[in-house]
Picture (cartoon, rainbow, N blue to C red):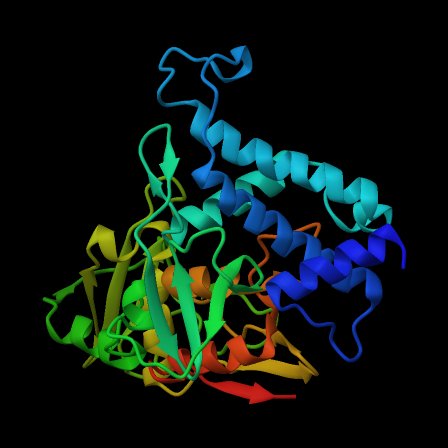
Length: 343
């Protein structure tokens, strides 16, 4: 057995990784390396940095090194693995800083560490279960946990008080209910729209734009947004007795792509939300997202999955997920109104 095969076997045994039935050996190695790098980055949260080392010095010696150290661990780990598995080199971007930033951002968005302006530190341990999978955060580096993408999990029959929705800040009320609650408590006024707005596209197919230049005339409530990129505002609108009525949506509900909660809810309420398609390949599932998930849902899915294209690790529409973990995530998302179709 070669050094490469021994190392790959060790990674897979530690992280519970299995190759898909039709998956190429190179892609499997890429997945293993990606998860291993994530686990090493996570373990670095427990590292003690020698502040006497000049390369870690800053104006605030108690702060800056931790984030720098976390990202450098990712870059150095990838370099070491690429040396051992040279076949993966051309599957990843040459920009290792982009990989480090991507992993850092995924960890930050899903609470995998506490962050102050310059430092990161391990979070308190928390566990949330769904369908015999326990999603784990804040675990010890010496604790046995498997990996799906960058996310840590354990197989368990236990039921936890903490839900997956609570752990990842996913609203429990469901897409359609969130939409209806929003439109039912709004105030409306008549406006003239002119050519200043884009309107939510209700006729979504693969590759079609999410926003179009004509309103939905079916009489249902929908969304529109101003065309200015710099200071874009979002509105609810409806047409009643030939009058165009609108209501501005509060900024916190639309900033940083939070508008997708309402967009998904609007389409779900009207039975127009595209289903996500998935294909089972032995121990893994390939997922094609039908309509871009809201940030909290996307954070969960992206953390617990691998990109199909490792040169674009942040691409959220096409992902690979451990089959058991997928069943759990699918259950969470179906409970709030997302639909799936096996292909």
